[in-house]
Image 1 (cartoon, rainbow over the protein chains, first blue to last red):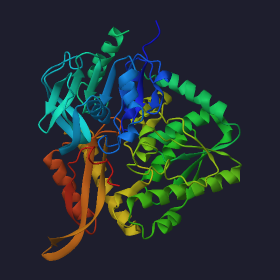
Image 2 (image 1 turned 45 degrees about the horizontal axis):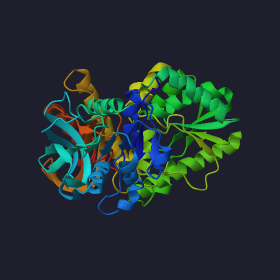
Image 3 (image 1 turned 180 degrees about the vertical axis):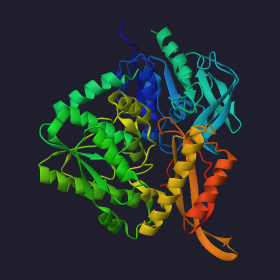
Image 4 (image 1 turned 120 degrees about the vertical axis):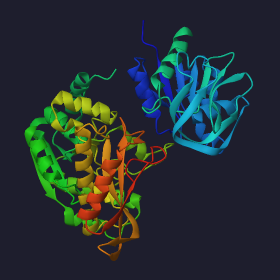
Length: 192
Length: 314
């Protein structure tokens, strides 16, 4: 069987290339693609929507075709940081500038392991870098994790394999980051 | 999974295919450029001219170290003496981005002059992933101008080749080990050198202060990690701040410089946490720097992670 193919949609994040690296290290075929890539051109088994400099509340136009992917790509999708915020807004949730932004080391509590946190501890030290945040998950999504100052650190849709993470599982300083990606890849594999 | 052996084979082959004729490679003695030089030397043999630029912005003993490293690898290189040129270009510049651009431009002009002399049309650089990521472009914000990416002048005529472009430092180190490069474990040192560790204007005096302070930090932290008092940080150095403060030395009022000590743990430079340093070790560095480095009377320790800080201050 061919290797699974999971691409990274580049929204201009500092850690987009790290997402590519983690996926490569986990043995899937991966590539970074611009966020203007037409959905028809993506023959993939899963997608990661990267974080990025665009403030989704302020300049959503810079998020390219992320909305198309969420509507029309029939594969599991993991939105990270700006990708997560965009996903929440797209499906009717709320995102806005955070009262307290989070940069660097943050502790999150997993209230519901969902698919992404299977086999992981309830308390995780993760690395963050965001000015905006999701304040309310869309209806049809459940919140999986939160921190003291950010209510939706992770969410999952009930009826489709869509996931959002506010923190960055792709960087070295985040505990169990690879495990979270492995859990996402398991979902991609089950969806084949 | 990343395989250094496979990478070496592919990189040498790609360099052979891409470059027809002579190339110049810029070497600093660090892990990235030394690794790139060994790969390029395997691919191009005598068609490669390595150059080391003495910017006057290097650390204590750096030039001797570079010489030993390159000799041991059999890389023939030429030294370009350019300290006066760099200090001249940097005169009066305070803005960190302007500093980095001036340095990038000055480097390239030197490489172009050298390329003309030897008839080379290619410039090989040891650029790695964080360099181009942090330099930004299109959607990506510019965090800082890496001299070897966004610091290149638009008028540049040399064709740039970057064999390590997709690698992070930990992967470069694995390639370096596989190639037998002795500096594989050397701590990162930025291309613009001590210029970005002097906040404010770069002058001979201020560079001398930060050079001496960096030497103490390196010596003490290396000693402390060798004797098991702490883990060796990923990167560790001193920064001269543009802040003066009041002190008392030998019953006399002084108004002196401030040095910040920075030491971080990281794997790839894309995230970092400040290193826990035992109090005794911090104390020894503080005493030594204030006693040994003229004009410094205050030491602070930087307890910022990346993000929100970057590792270097500029």
